[in-house]
Length: 470
Image 1 (tube, rainbow, N blue to C red):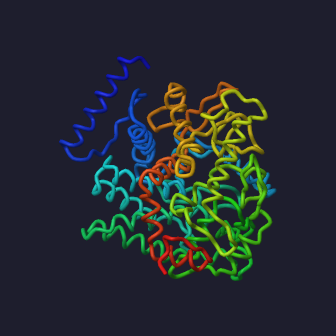
Image 2 (spheres, rainbow, N blue to C red):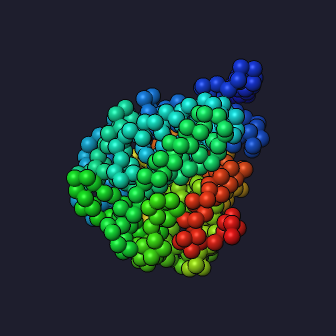
Image 3 (spheres, rainbow, N blue to C red):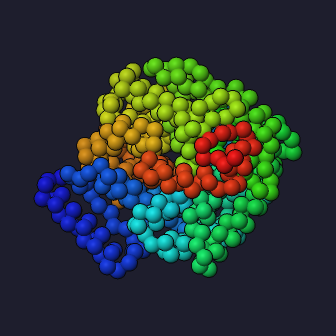
């Protein structure tokens, strides 16, 4: 963009901020274009705020839930990865429309709303009204022993089946939702009636969630899905290492239905995919069966709330090392670029799940099609701030005319294929807002880690952290 255009955008942005200060906090957040010659802090402000617009402006108008994405989604894009990993033949081939809302994405949107209030993009009372709208809707919506489905119709609260056997509870998606709700309860803890009402609603949902139901009555496995029609026929144990550590932590933190340490050990720690201990590009990776660690969202979803710094367990795993080294390995692979894709390098890296010219793919070194997801590097800010900032500046200043829009960065791009997504996904947008904030202020980490139930759950599973009270 030419210098004159940049000046105009800066003036417009300044006027927006000035108007907000004069009239109180707005119900809307205006998007901005590419603004040159700004500080790193100002750039982070812009990226976080514009990304948050996905949850604030594109939320479902009836329920306030986060829509899964801003286009329609075909179920097979998601199921291709699941089918390959689990040999699941019962795939849905339907198209989900604009009513499809993501339960896990809603949890991430709630975390983003806390950031928005703390950064003064929206008013506290305005945010609480939105959150009450969400919990009042969810209290009446479909849930199964207190566990919510993966997809929900944002107008009716009815389950949108993800497959023929997956038409009920999704314990992993529910764990992201509860992470968001409990953190919001910790933040919106004022004495006014609205905040008290919101906290009471969260307590109802948190207390009702029967995590133990997903153990099938024993301590062998925790199962991802349960269906009122098909019971546990889906037969997907939640085993590690992947994005679901938070599921075990939330399940162990429950005040009414906590899982046992024995179940955690049997289903997660003793799974063949938990340990790694190999070295790639000079970095040792403690956990994960994937060669070179798999997609980066493994190190981002759980750690939106859980602070990995100083976090260890009774198996001598250092989670700060895990999150950092996986990120460094992913970046080093992109720099090495064995398939010689255009654009890959020190300032353009990050393989994780998201949209591509092939549909929805869990991109990683083993599944590398030349597609970079901006969320991968940006949600790694707490681990690799210098390298993430390097990538951010490249995405924003050099590629912004192709991938920057009203909801922040597009979900993915491939310079080799001259392909640039027009889509945004809740589960990719949320971590950008939250993890940049954890890098800048530690806000979400500090709130979540001091919740008494969460502290109890971490201790129950054998974790130690300087954030845990004795």
